[in-house]
Amino acid sequence: MLFNRVLITGANGLLGQALVHRLSQNREYDVLATARDDAPRFEDGSCGYAPLDVTQPDDVAHIFEDFTPNVVVNCAAMTDVGRCDEHRSEAWAVNARAVKTLAKHCRTSGARLVQVSTDFVFNGKRGPYDEQARPDPVNYYGRTKLAGENAVREAGRANWAIVRTVLLYGTGRDLRRSNIVLWVADQLSQGESLHIVDDQHRTPTHVDDLADGIERLLHHEATGIYHVSGADMVSVYELACAVAQEFGLDASLVEPVPSSFFEDAVERPPRTGFVIDKARDELDYDPRPLDAGLRDVQESLQGFSGS
Image (cartoon, rainbow, N blue to C red; front, side, top):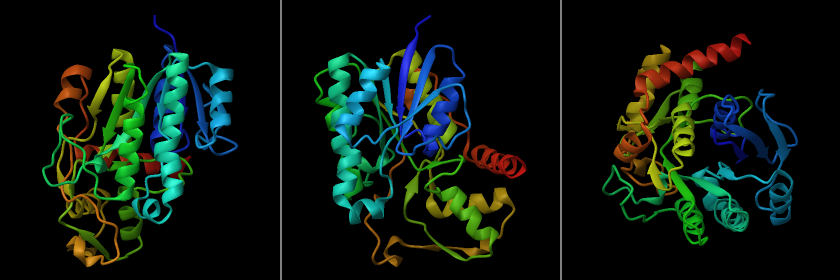
């Protein structure tokens, strides 16, 4: 059996927690979870944990020396589109320059690098997109993530994979950032009215499906670019209404508006979403339908409240 020493960065985030949990249950993997925090935010004692700021090259070098990974999955990212636009140097440091550092160490050590990326590398004019589509980001977040992808490709080795995903949702413990499903459910449960754009379309992705796709990619030792997302294309407004319906909340509080309603908002691609045929065919990836994903989120929240 192939035995992999897997370094996961950004392990306290939504995807990081899901991936740590999944890989830690598999005897093929010896997992070291890392994040900026002094301690893990997840409850999983079956893997190691070490603080790591990926923007600090010396700290990254020490992790590679101490743990000697042969697989690195980079979940560390700055994903808040507005914050990336306002704090560009910080966004570039995390989403681009840190990836270059990781790629350099992977090249030197022979470790395999899996970089998690986004649908926001595309302009959203011709979605849904397959892996052959030409990136053309419309905002600074997308540009930093594309720069991270390029750093992986330019590292001089063929042993890499880029996993792009779309509008991630799900549950985790003590998350720094919410996600659209949790936010909509929280606001509606408080009786708040919401203005939600109806001219932006996505294929929302349950975090456990993305973690499953990455595990399958590792198992198959797949290389190159893979689009791993949900299969259901919906507008953001339709997603919010689906959340209301699944959670038994008042959908009449959700009002559809065009993107232009938010005058100061950072530009976002209007129609992204992914064609996931490659992941289906090569990885046997099979994401859950959107309604099932939302139902799983509701059940997970009930589990958290009861624990």
